Image (cartoon, rainbow, N blue to C red; front, side):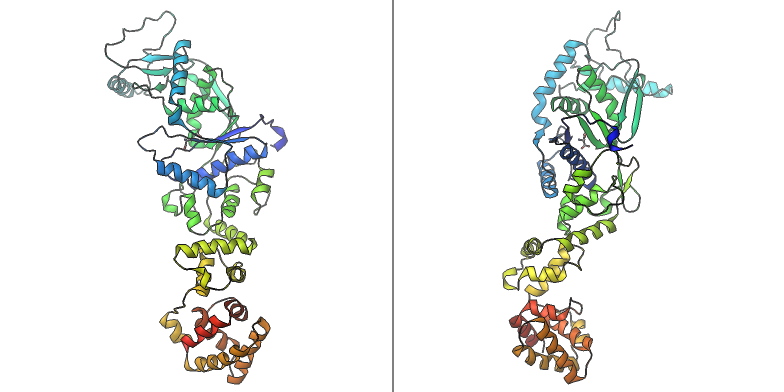
Length: 472
Ligand code: GLU
């Protein structure tokens, strides 16, 4: 289907509605990104709603983790965050209206009776369901409400017909109303249930497009029926398929970084993660690398794949490396500085971090590797004893000693430094690696670095001589 084929209901209003029972994970972040991008694409409004009615499992820490994750990803909301727990009065008001309108009713069946009913149905080989005994019908005489029992409130689901929607990802979905029983919208203590709160919120918030995980497909027919009973306009639904792990199984904690903030810790750039998530179940031809602005320009719901997307850590790492390579040196230097600070390494004692990151940014996979490299320039170098033993042989030390003399007097630029190394090779009858590798070990503690003359130039004369002296 081409993007022109579906009219978009405008002005677009989308929402991301996480339950704060855990971190913002990759699946949630992808849902948030698509909702955000769709609103941005159409000049619409993106709403953040915290679905915190599961008080036993919701925590303030999880709310904060979600807000942090959204901020890190740069997914700014235009309205909210709204908290469902702060909207209880509103839900109760709508329940009152539905009771008055007859689209909902009190049911006095106790949980024990309901269990017995279901048990009996199962024994008869029937699907367990509420039997509608308190559902008002024309000409039906209802039982006397038992004394002292607080009733639940049930939605009066239409008895006939089908509920259907054209899912923007999955296509047409139809469910016969006869398949659905009258679900509870308020518990005996008066608290509204999850499916009901979502409906009232989507209605009040004027949501035009519900973009969410397909674990909610089963809730949709119920939600549509309630919306219709309220006379509300039914939003369009786009149910995103789930994300599988690298190994094809369900994405879980086993797959390492589950919280978005863990990607920060592991040295990923948010821009790389956004780019990666954008391609997770959506495509624009063969384009792999595109920034957020480009994504917003291209994003549509027609190119979301209905099948499950598979997470690919290698691809994410590759993208991250691409983003680091083209990032600005000053930006990378600031990122590295804060990572060094967390390691209690003070970058001020070292050479220019901008110069260091420029040397390394096309050879690292993440910001932590960049910080590891920078740390070698800033902190004291302690090469491992076996590295010293292997590379700082007597022959190598003799060459480094004469090189030290040349470096003390050399002009401090790459050409002159390179000449000093060549002169030392000639004097001692050595090949390039026989001087360059011990030199790397002496000044940075590792045998592999970018071009050694460039490393020396960035490190600076004082540090180079001091480090050589310590090793010789
Ligand atoms: N709170 C639900 C969740 O975190 C999302 C509900 C919805 O998007 O309708 O899975």
